[in-house]
Each structure stands twice: as structure tokens, then as C-alpha cells.
Image 1 (cartoon, rainbow, N blue to C red):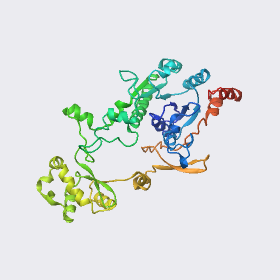
Image 2: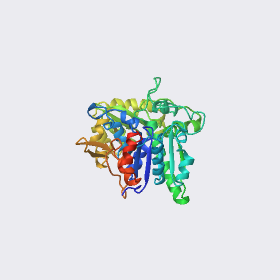
Image 3: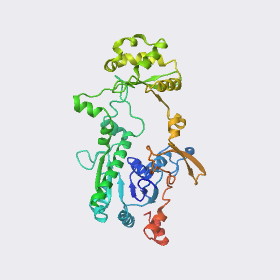
Image 4: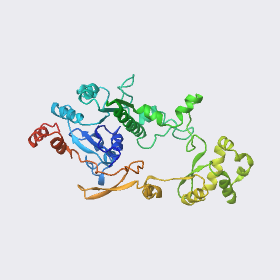
Length: 398
């Protein structure tokens, strides 16, 4: 049993907020992915298994939709629209990422959904929220990371900013959405009423840049790009013989500097002023230049192992392909093998980014094929006959 077992979620979100439904599904919620008959757009995003584009072979779709079921409904079709309303009546949460006003035009806006099911939690995830002068503007992850301040501080001084890796704006919004949904569910236990949650991806992104907003509001300063130097000025990435590590000048400074001195590389770091963390912070660039010269002759794992044994909080910087063999991730069971019977193959997936001991996350099912559970949901849960389903399929409603 998962932490959210017994909870039903209707997931109408595209790639902007698909992670939100995945987070809830990993905790045991019954998440039903509602897609148009031709499939949700993310099914057409590669890479694809064996480089063969197909709605059921997108690795991108697979990651965001593990543990979900799938029903296809054309919400513009009157009958399919009514079927969704019937599903709403037996659901706890609905997640959507349509442009503001789109569901209203389909007769599926908040007032209608709240009347059908007063306990329903509706979570709307859009680039700029449901109101305000930018509500109707479009924006992808790149635009959102730029407007949210994430891109500006990413890169090297005096060089162009660098787009953050992955889909960090979308992910920030999805995490905030999942947290807000759970807060709304707690509130529902108190007053038996659902809420409409309005998530702005740009605002979520701005909140996820840990130092930019606090620096501005505290001192009025605009944070610059620093390369791999952390904004605290106590961490920086260095190149070793065969990879990268992250230096740290906190922790046991004496052990670190004695080690560097033993290798004949300390230069002026043995002077007493470097004992002061504030001095090390103020002169971080010079400090890390010396440590970089020292680290370049070590292998990354050798440096990391000895540093951690000395209680110095160093870390390795690994390429993505090395994560499969990462000792910590293996010990946590972070990767799990998932069997795809339609392909007769097993694929390795990342699990949930947390550990619950009483209600651990599980892989309940592999990502759904397009429309895989449509007949099951319409017959068993909504009581439609086989003939009615055939008619709807012929009309392109499902």
C-alpha cells in the first residue's frame, strides 16, 4: 500500500506537468492519464526505443507516465465530455495544463467541476498562471528558466548564459503542484471541500533558484554568473585526471590543508589567515585555483574516497551514464527493472526521489500504451456496453 493508496487522480497534463501525476502515482494513487485519441504530444517526443518513432516507444513519455493508466477521450466530443464529467464525480484530484480558459470553453471549468464534485482538487499548471497580463502568453521550458532567473546565473563570467540542463522549469512547477495538491487534501479532511490550485511555472522556477531572490530582497544585488563556483563561495568543481570532483573548503580545513601540504601543493594556503572561513570565502578564486592545481594529478574516485574518510565533504561530479553504478543510488534501490510485455524486454527506470519506510514507492505498472485502459475504465467503472464503446470509437470520441 502506498502513501496515497485509495486516491484517484485524473491527469490531463502535457509534458509541462506530467511529472506531478507521476509523483502521485509513485505514492500509490490511481492516476488515470486522459489523452486525446491520437495520443498526448509527449508520445511524439524522442528518443524512441530502437530509434523507431511510435506513440508507445517514447522514452520521454515512459519516464513521466510510469505507474499510470490511460484512457482516451476527445473532450470536444459531447459524449466523451460527459464521460469525463462522470469520472470527475468519482475522483479526488484533476491535474491539467491547458491554456487559461480552455476548460471553461469545453464546459469543464472550475465552477462546473466543483458543482459536480465539491471535494475535487483541481490543479492548473500554466506558464504564467490563470490571471495577470501574461496569462495568455505561451512559453516553453527555455523561456521559463530565462524569465524565472535560472538561466541568467548559469554559465561563466563574461560569457553568455547557459540553458539549464533538462526541463527544470517544468519540474519545479510539477513539484510545487504535487506539494500543493497534498496540502489541499489535508485541508479537505478538515472541511470536506476541494480547492482550485493555480501554479505558475515561471513563479515556481523563480522560487527554485535558491540564492537569486534572497540576494535581491536582502541586499538589492543582482546575482552574477560564477561558472562552477557556488554562490556561497565555499564549493567549486575541479578537473581530476579522469573526471571531476567538487571541492569544499568547509568541514575539517586542517585535514585538507595538511593533505595538500604533504603533496607539496599548498603554496600560501598554510598561512594563518586561511584558517578563517570568512577569509577563505573572500579569496575563494585564489583558493580554488591552488586546489585545482593539486587535484589535477589525482583520479576522481581516489580523491573522493580519501576526502570523505577525512570528514571533508567532497563530492564526485558524474556523467549521467555513471549513475547506474553509483554506490549510493544502488544501495537506495533508485533504479528498478520494469518489464514491457508488448516488447518482451525489460528497461531500467529511475524510481521516486525519496524513501518512505512505512509506505515505500513501488512500480505498480509500466507506462500505459495509448488507450490501453479505455475499455476497462468505460465498462467496469462507467458501465458502458461493448456496443456503446464501439460506436464511440467509430465516431473518434475515444
